[in-house]
Image (cartoon, rainbow, N blue to C red):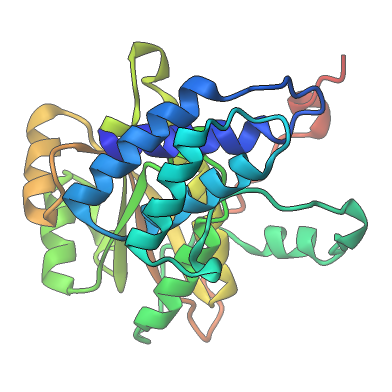
Length: 281
């Protein structure tokens, strides 16, 4: 998929500039490939956020004193920027300076993590779209392999649709049907290049989901994961009901709802000791 190839090259050229031992003329093949791909992409799909990201990446690459930058590449880039009429603030990709002294330790963060539990009982209060959008913004801060960002979130609030999806998944439906919303988290399979990366989408989905449920918790929304049933027939039927394209692989379901105003029973889910989990070598 052309988007995956462009994002991968964007990341490789960004990442190269973070090394302390840059060699003169680095990135020759990658900048040439990126030039061809982003030109083809723009001609087919037009101006969008991927073009914005890539323009920023190429600009930072050309500004680096060690990078490969032929006259042909520089002339092409100058013309391309004029064609797409991009403003400086829209050049999304590239590099930034990181100063560790600017980061502040948040002592209350651990207490916040401890507050979040899997919740299977919810109030009748409606979840606003703005709260869902904010939670997704938290989720998007999670890293992904080479910044390819294959994860997609499908959200459903219609109770009849939620019921159909839950039934299609052959799930324990009683507590699921109490939820006021449902996420199906997927990953675009075309963003993975080969057999050796076959598990990466699940890993990326896990990172995304953990930030998502913490973001939901911060918005006063309880959540509980529900394992996706992965038989071919169940998967196909779920995608049909949920309007999920075939090229997306379902990772997990998350049931959500506003926390109740009165105390509710939750599982302790006691964690194992540090000695069991951690081995310092």
